[in-house]
Length: 368
Image (cartoon, rainbow, N blue to C red; front, side, top):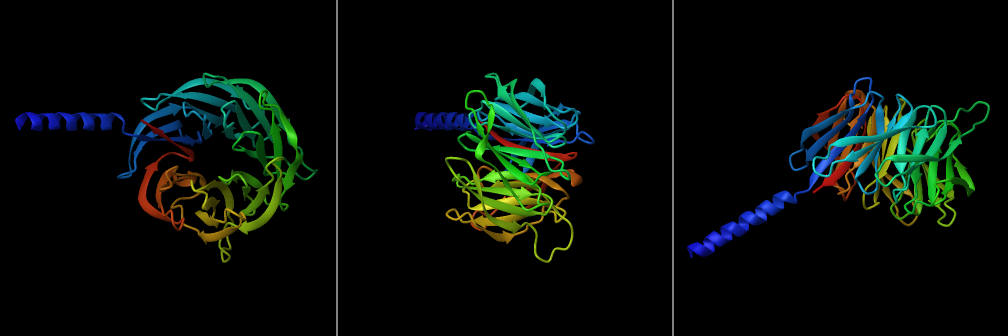
């Protein structure tokens, strides 16, 4: 009997040790502005009790504002608004800490957004200040390679181009480039070998004058696209024509309540993992607009406007597990955690947050 008990204890200890070794760790990477922030902040987050541990502050005084992962999650990239460059970093698979790889010019002024080809071949850069977009090849070691293409947007006499984001289609064949200054979302066909861009057969869609398309999200089914338009705080939705990538307008929906009389500016836009809900952040109304999405028609129905419990929610993240939402409130210097109701789409304030100077962007990584 003693031998059996001892064996069971040993087995249990082994199982517990194995479970400890294979426990999934949640890591948050936060980009900041260098007026107050010190660079890129790295935290380990425990969602069971909303606690966190600072792992690293990677010095970068050039405002590494927007971040994006390589599809293999071994590398991360930053748009450095302060010195008009983009940077690459290697992620340590054990410690989650970042090691700089290399840096390249953004080919314009005020780079505010980077995105990565779904197959990890190219990185796309949006230069807000000068209205250029750029495409770089990515090397196998995660570093940024040679320049593949660069395009300068042009506006009418009273328009100044402001390229704000580039979002690739799930198959990487097309990109959608939102220019706030000229009220257009450009559609480009991507050469799958070289990264060179060719205007689509329908090269752009134009929104209502003054809307200012900022960020763009594609429904998980690939049939619809949604633009958070900064200047008029609206979401413009489109049907996506699969073979050409063209955008066909569907509807235009307000991001703020009908009785709101103040000024608000749209920022970011993301789907829930199941595609049933769409979220868009308001700076001024200080909220996330929540919509239910009809997956067949693409139409939106407003669900509510939960407060962000901070000012200027520049960027936010919908947890890939669908359980939480993380919001960076730039002007309150905090990253705030919300529980998410998967049935209603609404959020519950947890009263938990991380104090971070001028946070702009948050990304989530699970490590084993």
